[in-house]
Each structure stands twice: as structure tokens, then as C-alpha cells.
Amino acid sequence: MTDGVTVIIDFYEDSIDALHGIVHDSLLQRPGKIYVLSTHFHPDHFNREILSWHNIRPDIVYLLSKDILRHHKASLDDAIFLLKGDTYEDDLLQVKAFGSTDSGDSFLIRLQGLTLFHAGDLNNWHWRDESTPQEIKKAESDFLTELKPISAEAPEVDVAMFPVDRRMGSDYAKGAKQFLEKIKSTIFVPMHFGNDYVGGNAFCSSAEAAGSVFLQIDYRGQCFDITKLLNNIKNDGK
Image 1 (tube, rainbow, N blue to C red):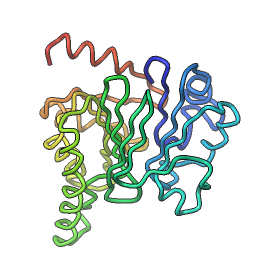
Image 2: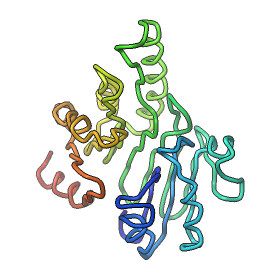
Image 3: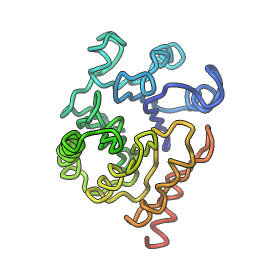
Image 4: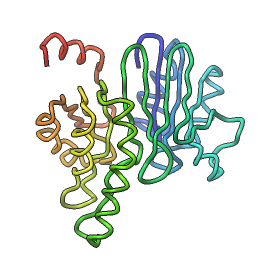
């Protein structure tokens, strides 16, 4: 969130319980414009509850991947639906949908002078310990193909949110490393690690080696002031 604007991405449960936490107790009560984004229909990225928030905040703008509509998780009049290549823009926010190596989209977001990237399920999903060499090669090729137009559009971002999921087995962070090789990211935020905070935070040294400030996440509901952090980075000349 920034001054007068709140963006909620891929909500599936709140930080305390179904009715309490950062979203229900704070963000939905926050003055200003609220945008709710979902990159795809998987239940750990999309919860139909978000559509009921319109009763609390009738001015919410919903920007959802079109696969959510295709899988009948929402109706045409519930949201603005984005396919790969589509752009939504108003006087506060710009969201461009890029591809994924799983379902739906990834999102490049421009907001009040900041550029943010949310990968959704875009990753080099190679499962090296289980896959054949051919499957690994294809997974990497598919990932780099999707990454190419993103890096062309935004070779640098202020904040990158990208999967670092130890369930993939050895070399699980390869996609995140490749992402940072292609797109310079001032702040790197790990995601898709569930409650495996140790696994997510293990990427810290790799992110720092790539020139990023790593956002270490240690518990549900943890909050960070990204604007302040970016200002500190700028002042430190990083």
C-alpha cells in the first residue's frame, strides 16, 4: 500500500483467521482506492471471498486473470479480466499481464513511481530430483521464454515477488536466480513457500549476491514499510 492506494494480490487467507488479520482489520478499512488482484484460479492464489468485499467497499476494483473466469470461479460482471498482454490503467495504477509457466498471469505493476512485479506461479518448475533431462530442459525453456518479454519491458524493478519453494527439491531456487540475472530487482520478496520460512529465507545470500535487498519473512502477518526501505537504499547509495 502507498498513500491513498491499497493493492491486495493473491489473497487466499488472512493473517489471523478467516475474519481477522491485516486484510480484514486494516486494509479493507483503509481510506482511499482499493485494488484486488489475482494472478490465477488456484486456491492458494484466489479465494472467492474477495468478491464479497464489494459489500464492504463498493469502490473496489477487481483485476483478475481470465483463467479465473474460464474455470467458473467468478462471473463476467465481477471483475476486469486480464489475459497475457492485456493492460489495465487508470490515473493511479497500471497493471500489465504477462505469462506464466503454470496457470494464469504474472503482473507488472506501476504505482506512484514504483515498479513492482508479482510472479504468480511463473517459475522454472523443473523438479530436478524427479524429472527427466528432457522435462527439465523444457521447463527451463518455457520459463526463459516467458521471462524474455518481461525483462524487455522492465529490465529493472523496485520490488520483485517471486516463488522460492523448497518442495521442488534440490536446485529449487534456480528460477529465482535466473529471474534476478535478467531483471535487476532492488528488493526481492520470496513467496510460495507456505510455512517453510527457513526455506524461503535461505535464498537471502543469492538475492544479495545479485545486488538485491532480501526481505526476510519470519511469521504470518509481518509488515514492512517498502517505501521507507527503498528510500534508505537510495540514501545508502546501494
